[in-house]
Amino acid sequence: MRIKPEQLVRTLKSQQHVMYWLTGDEPLLMQEAADQVRQYCREQGFEEREVFNADRGFDWLNLLNSSSNLSLFSTRKLVELRLMTAKLDDTAKSAIQQYLDAPNPDNLLLITSPKLEAATLKTKWFKNFEDAGVLVQIWPVQRDALRSWLDQRLLRAGIQANADAITVLMDRVEGNLLAAVQEIEKLKMQVPTIAGQTLQLDANTVLQVVADSSRYTVYQLVDAALVGDAARAQKVLRGLRNEGTFPLLILGALTREMRSLLPMLQQKEEGMVISGIVQSSHVFFNRKQVVTTALQRLSTDRVWQLLNQSRLIDQSIKGIAQANPWDELSSLILSLSGVTPLTVHSTGAA
Image (cartoon, rainbow, N blue to C red; front, side):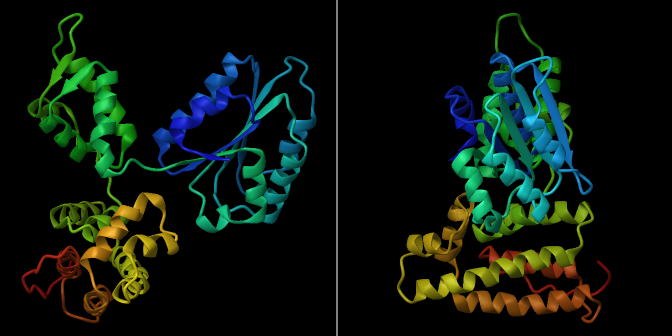
């Protein structure tokens, strides 16, 4: 079965499953979900824990032997299988399938892995896992949900923050939840407090105490442009440039997204309802709103114009055209966001 992270504790308490698979690329949320499983096992008397790190040279017989061997010290055991990659070879799939075919009822198997690709989730052997165990897909906290997430974390630490304080904190820790919880602990120690009262946090205190630990990805850039948030898209672009991201990676993400929108835009222009287009195109649930907004704003003609504009950027990155690729990327992103940029076409090195 497939559940949401917030359903994990309740599902564990049902005691109906002996296998759980946590998958995602957000370290803090993955760690906390795994800790929930470990806490449950401790409460239920699992006195032994065995951990396997499945790297390239891993011997999969170790996993199978762990399931079949009786422990000399306890009757219940937590077995953790930490996958270093989400792409498993046939040997790995076979071993997991054998474990599924004959699970040890006195063991609980916890598998953790990077985010699984959609193609993997559709395979027969993985569906066999879902029939026998529990899958928890853990997604990063998107910006539109980050404010609420930070507010709850602050309250948990006994801190009441005003809207401006949370806005500043969002900008400084976005994309880095581990840094967020560390900074909240720092705020808890440094903000003046009176015994028994909730701490009051304002924006000036955040500016003074919290370091800029934000991390940006090309996917955040793409999504900001698609929803028409030009200011944020430009901010993310500057962050990526400062982090040393190669501009061709950014351009590739933008052009791939635009090309994927073309058949959906064509369907819209043929009279199909946007919600139906998104559903039939199997857009991931966490991106449905972004894609829906883009389909409402854009047309096939406009996307083809932007793709044609992308050719100049590709040539400038490769040194064929005399233009600054970062200026051209900025112009492209403004156009994709719905803003008419000034003509830049500047020369010189990036």
